[in-house]
Length: 330
View 1 (cartoon, rainbow, N blue to C red):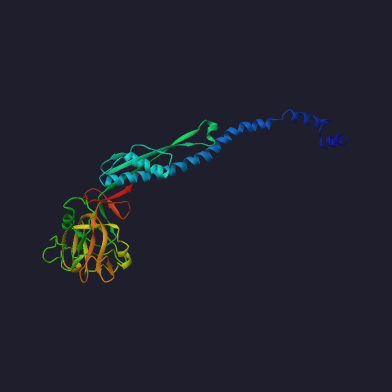
View 2 (tube, rainbow, N blue to C red; view 1 turned 120 degrees about the horizontal axis):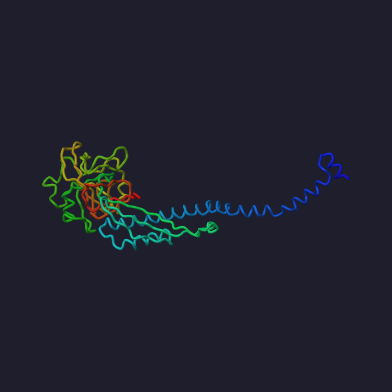
């Protein structure tokens, strides 16, 4: 009776509720069918969100491995001995990723460069539902190199082309035997003549970039002023110089000089790599005592060196003196 009164108040015909229940009972299971139909696109979007993200992450790791492999191969080639390039590339890829394959590196010239490509299969978590079990991920890296054309030296010191030839026999450096070079650069080679100086008042120091820096920027073909005096610039403190002991640095080589005192200049011919083993620049600037008293000198040797930093640029026209600059150009 209560239901009949409710049906009358609501304006529903008598017996509407049982009919509604029967109709709803006939639609049971419809939501399950709808959910089943929606599962495929839902899993598809999950595959996009998860598996595509995993692909990007794997490719980033593979790119790092390819970069390292290309740099390693380029270092060997710049030193004049490429060796087994694929084995070198594979070793670096394995060290950075472990389950990727390195293709044979490709060498090219003008400019000198090498390209390394790595690949690896990436298994998917959800994409197999839509028919994709895995995707082949690939990444490549190209490294170019050349003789330095200019840059900022970590020590404002310049060597003569005559001195470089005297120590290397006129060719590329091929020894690690240290020699003492006196400042000015006499060292028994006869390069500076009877006066033992290239320019009056010049002791082989370049004017620094200013302020408290101990560095000097130069470029091939340019003239750069001399710092008068036989001690390092005031911008060079003892820690700056001591930090270079045992390190290999790129230093400019000059082939012409002129002027006097603070107006003296050196013409930069190219850049060579020099390993510093000892020095005596007077006062507190002393390590290893390669010379004593009022003498000024540095000890070390010219060597072959590959610089992957950003302090120097490379390009055509610079002479090859055993130093090379690498750049990741991919």
